[in-house]
Picture (tube, helix red, strand yellow):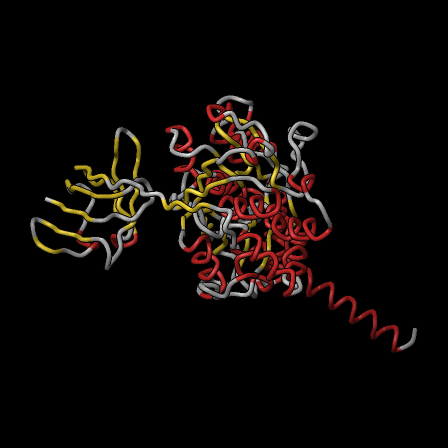
Length: 427
């Protein structure tokens, strides 16, 4: 046998041994470790429901059986969490993120404000669910279709200007002549649901089917609301042939191009992401274990019980979607921005969430006073505490947030769960 062939065989064997060693070290790494899974969204919504369900089962698919801890890292519509992951998180696979879809897709594509990372460099693990967004309207307003929304004004509840719920009013009013009015400023989607129930708004758009089924399963079945249109590139299996896709309203190729760009984040679903520079063997292990979890019988049983849909997207598919997205020509991005953010056809109303003051007993204080929890009508409420904006007094004297302790009786002024406290006055 020639030296050249022997050399080639030796090189190939060495490569196999290196790969095997890498896989083994990746597997051994997690023994006795803790994985922190950050969630960019607030508790109670779809992102949190998925993350907590997955975290309860994911460890079983990872050699070494690491412990998962779920923490919420909210702010700037997901940019705070994504920036932390890219710049401060450990790059060893012990800090991961359930990210807002827009935070790694259209937001960095269209603005530099608050974006301190390159989405293409993140380590994409996978998504449990492809996004199937819908527009719904309360039955009391007798809006049964998108055509009905073209005939009279419809009050649409929204969170922030980067959300699909907000931008959908712009592109549908601009492109199809609907008459949505945007009532924006709700802290989270759960607040929009409450506003719908109270009659403060008439509709919600961009709500994922999985979140709707988890939070309000009877609504998906036709109680309380009508589903007007699907805001996704493909139809949800249970809505196919029953509710039209928004693409069916497109009049020309340009509108179809714009809708595809607008709805690409829906295809990304609810992305699970690692930091840049994650060792390849460890990323591969996280990807395979994540997909194995989504097929696990115990997990699927829990998912069914919580009414969350499982329509997986692989890490490789996510990476490809996002890399291709950031190759979009600037001319199309400019048109995208114009149709989703500029219009004299959209009435904007900033909602005012009332501030309430409750005398409560503090049940928990976390992150050196940055989070304070208490019970209100039997339900846990957690408020954020700002160093500069939250006024704190302890026994009549100005205090620091670190001075607030569990067991104290305090008057707390706030706008609801997961909002920032205006003041905390403790005895």
